Amino acid sequence: MSNEAGNPHVVMFVANDVSNDTRVLKEAGALGQAGYRVTLLGVSATGETTTETIDGGVPLTRIPGRFVLRDERTRRRSARRGRRLFKAWIAPARKARIAARLADLKAESGRAAAGRRARTIGSLSYQRGRAVRVLKYRRWQVESKALSLGRRVTSFEARKVAELWRWWDGWWPARQQLVSWRSVVPEADDYEAIFADVLDRLRPDVLHAHDMHVIGVATRAAGRAALRGRTVKVVYDAHEYVAGLSQYGGRTPRMIAAWAQHEREYIGSVDRVITVSPAIARRLHQQYRLDREPAVVINSPRLETVCSGSEVVDVRTTIGLPGDVPLLVYSGGITRARGVETAIAALPRLPEAHLAVVCVPHTRTRPVDELRKLAARLGVEDRVHYLDPVPTGEVVRFLRGADVGLIPILRYPSHEMALPNKLFEYTFAGLPVVTSDMPTLEEFVGKTGIGEVFVAEDADALAAATGRVLADLATYRERVQDPGVRNEMSWETQAVHLRDVYAELVGLPVHSDRSAVPG
Image (cartoon, rainbow, N blue to C red; front, side, top):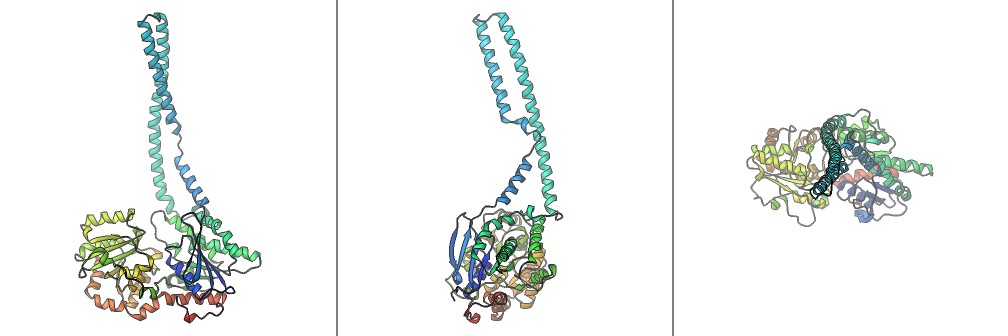
């Protein structure tokens, strides 16, 4: 259904370039197909404004922007770390000046010696000049020794400062007390500068803020609209449980606490909250004392794209593995929190099995290199295959060639409440699932019978759970392929939940027939 001018105008926006954010794309398309006027905004990765049209006739615009506050934080941090008390002692100019003066003195000595041999300089003049040159030489020699001492002092200072900063970098990021999100994650205010003017010009009826980065931007835009006598509803789409995010790289406990503080400051001002799992919905309802429990819209694949589309070379064919060799697959981001190390450590206990690791964003990252080293130490490098990801629409068909899908995530509060995308990608690909014992995943697997659960970070337990699935693969596959399970999990069903939220919030579009609108 095409959008009609009189229908509610929904502006969705997110703090990335949208290209690989399947949840954002599917939600925008679902509302557009239902007849709402939808505009989708993202942040340009190229620095240029780009516009295209996605499913449902929804225009997608990527807006360029500068992260002034974030970059200033980085600059000031670098400046603080570069400060030294004795840095001037070893300025290159001092060394060059001493060398030049010593060269002058050597040349003068040579000319004086030549003049004495040629009898153009008298003995008295030569001795007087020699005494002056000796004094000058000793002066520059003292400065040279001072410079050498300065180098040693500066080197000592640099070592101690580096040790201090290493200690600080281990201690301070773990401190969650006295956090101010404006100083820890100032990019949240940079998004205000990027989106604010555009949001005001678009005059939406609903602002749909995806993820915690832009919830503040949405509520402030609604506040400005109220000053002009307009009512703008705000929907906050919580993609994860922010306060319990996993920690890796630059995502420190302090940064997580800052983003959680940012969410807490603004979530009470939104009109509706939706999220990705029942457990997160319950936690947000309780933690923030929301007037109602958030609606759940699971980020699952479209059933229609799973059952149709062009042929895709699957993972087994890509590796070149015979059909009778057990093939496990992990598909997703490669960080320590994802637990892929546990899967590799389990391979010595599964001597016939191979593991395909589909690496997001690609195979040329440091975490992937660490996995390679681990596999080599364990002597299983010939049974681990690292693959670049395929386009989003091909993931499910690509995974079909495997036997078992792995979700070995580690224990973080966000993981304990998550229903990750890969769960549905595996099941729609017809793969039984072996997952670590995160409560929400354990409940889902127990309810559907589509796989087995193991204790997180326990390689022996992962191997045992995988062995149970491989020993009765036909039964598990039959459960995974149950049409009832697929239909309930499908995006087509989830899109109905999303449209129900909007129907309650701003009403149905003119001439809307939700039953006839695909997700």
